Image 1: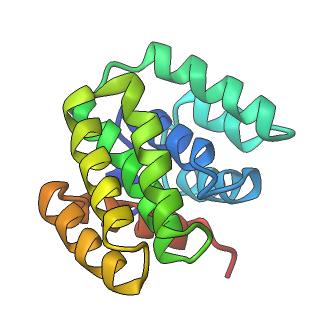
Image 2: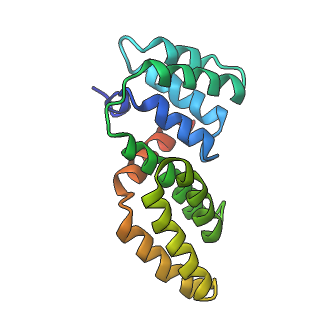
Length: 168
């Protein structure tokens, strides 16, 4: 089994949706990754083939939403919530959003899915603002955030997906 196919589980449509929804990956990257998965899989799922042929982001999202409805989750839904947060964190690491934006977007997302985690993120955001929203405050609150929210496994998976989706 190749490195790509080990990631082909029922939660892949959910993860791909998170990558697109968080704006970490675009249509072209998802199609490229889908093509590589198809090449390395004996019997790729139909949704993956459709994804590979999608014309634009809107079409891609429609395919992913349908696949999400049809695929029972392999993992706890809370894990997928953290995957989305990890996508936002990766954007922060890539410097496409600020620390403040990361915390704000995480809080907004968690408002709809997990009030306990949202409270935790809101407390960190408040602490960041109280400390003066500078690089020192960022370092302190980032350390606090990572202690409370283990993103490592998700960040590794994201790195794998993004690196295997890049054209050589």
